[in-house]
Amino acid sequence: MGKGLDNVRAIYLEGIAGGQAREAVTKCTGHRYTQHSTGVADGAEGFLAFFEPFVARNPKRDIEIVQAFEDGPWVFCSAYQSLNDGAAQWVTMDMFYTDAEGLILEHWDTIAPYTKDTKSGADMVGGNRDIDLAVDGAASKALVLEFTKQVLQEGQHDKAEHFVADNIVQHAAPIGVGLDGLKAWLASDAAGTYEMLFQLIGQGDFAVTYGKRHAGGKDIAVFDLYRVAGGKIVEHWMNQEEIGPRETWGNSGKF
Image (tube, rainbow, N blue to C red; front, side, top):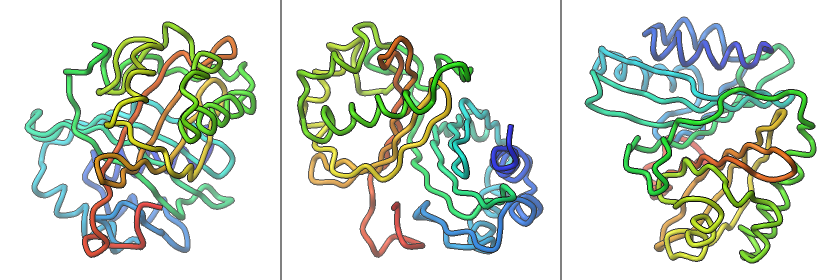
């Protein structure tokens, strides 16, 4: 595990879960901290202005990092948060850019309510957590890139079977079982159009995209996390957040 991933874990587990926000943000961020979580202002002081009151009003913070990996200066993590004995439950996916020393310089995220009622029956934060480093990470990213371009962006849903296993394990709450469930969702109004791929990173058999969809008249920031085996996508998680009006942003926005 590299320094960047260590610092991401510390921000979450020491700073937020452990209530040591000031110590963690001071230790783990670099010469700048550019923020894209729209409720949080830039810089260490912006982080503290949000998270010190957050810690105070949520005395019980059970946070579990579900998946985490790094790709050069980029770090991804997915986390489950239960606040105040389950009064609120959230799933977050986060992407960080770090400097040569692993200090965090920039952060993007999506935050969504945790639900047990997924269409496929699979848990939103369940599934495989272990990264298989024997798998070629470049090949995993290349497969996910072509799936994103051809199937999601170009709408060639009939090509999905070239990239996705029939028995894909589906953790995205609104998507049904298997390849057929995925294709049905892609063709629905709820899926809308995939307008922009902002970033793609990965390690081993995992790859994640961060991009923007437009559905129901709304812009949506979305992370799609994939696990690849045998040359196809075999597992999928999705976390999405509606992008609010510009006047509600505390920084330069989700991208």
